[in-house]
Image (cartoon, rainbow over all chains, first blue to last red):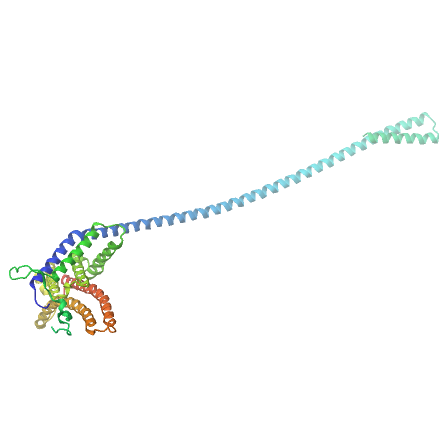
Length: 165
Length: 255
């Protein structure tokens, strides 16, 4: 066990040498190349995904900003619509009120006009009747009874005329 | 070697570490090249490591599973946490050497745990061969980097007064030679001692000849076995990391 065995020493070098040569050629080179290639591709993929993530974040920010902008715009539009509606309502109400006032005034004027016309007609008839009565009194001496009748007739006539108008 | 108890050769824990030729080869120039147990188990270790790594290298998949995962983890550990961490960028070219050292020693150590097998690294000749090889490569790396004169002058600290150099130079030479010696002895002693403790515990079972006492050494064997798996890997790692450290020293500028 402790004796020097040159043969064993040479066998050790031989075994190690063969293993070293074989592994260097058939194992280390392909394995290390493969590991480096994979590490490189993983690094690249990570970089790509990082860029994609940043892009997505930027896009999200953009969308958020657009959404906020849209929301503000919609709010503005609603406000505008409301104020326009209010204005329109006010205008319609005012117009209706004006129109109704005009109609009332017109009706009032019509009534006044008709009233005046009726009164004028009445005056004309009274005057005519008075003329007729006077001419009759002049023609006949009138008994009080006749006088009364005459007045009554005249009043009836007036009444009749008034009813007609 | 003292024989343990009355059990003859089998009871002697050192008996298991004696080497015998399995296939006898006539000596060439006075050197015996017979295939002994350590040679056989080194060949098996070489075949296992080569077979496993070549199989994985031939069937690499982008999303690893099982064996590929394990080999990838080992290779990455050796590349980054061992070679690159200790030597730096310059160590890239030394990765195959250090990785093979680690895998070869780890395989020899672990295969030695199979009952009936032989731990090649429990023989001083094997560990010495590896340590001598490391020593030669370290000197070669240093000389290649700095030139023979530059490497020699780099061995002693710069700015040391000349009279002190008389002491420093022998100390540095000794420290240089002690490194491979310690590498060889550390691995050999650890593997030998650990296995010997297991054999001692196993010997106790026979020695006690008592069914009541048998569980005690048995528990000892189980615990030691688990510990030996750990030691097998740790010793391979220590050998590799020290090699990397010596290489780093040799490649480094100045002392």
